[in-house]
Image 1 (tube, rainbow, N blue to C red):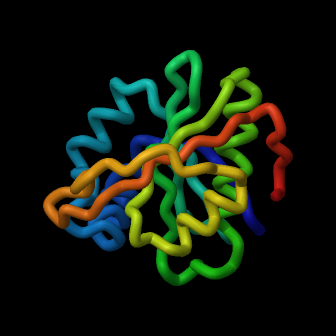
Image 2 (image 1 turned 180 degrees about the horizontal axis):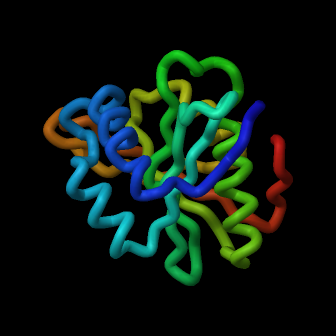
Length: 153
C-alpha cells in the first residue's frame, strides 16, 4: 500500500540519514533540516510503502510560484514509479494554492530526474554554475506553467 503523509519532527533524523546516503557532501545537514522544518515555510511530505517511509519531497510556496527543493527515494524502491507519486502530490498542492508555475533545480548529470521532470512538462530555464558544492556540479533551473497540469502524467 502506497500512502503520502506529512513528515513529523520524529522523521527528521531518518531524512538526514537518507540525505547523507544519497547526496554525500551536498546533503542537507540534520541541523539545517530541523531548523527549516521548525522555522521555514517549506512543506515536508513523506512517501510510505506498506507502512515504511521510503521517500520524501520538500517544497515551498512564495505566494507566486511553488519550489521543489528536494525529492528523494531510498535506493531499494527506485524504478517503481514512486517518484511520480511525489511529483503528482507536489504539483496538485501547487495547483490547490493557485500557483502560476513551479520551479526546481536539478544536477545537470542526474539523468533519471531530468527525464522525470521533463515528462511533467518542466522546461530548462538556465544553468547555475557549480551550484552543488563541494562537488562543483552545475544545476539546471527548470520551470513548468501550471495552467495545463494534469495529475498522473
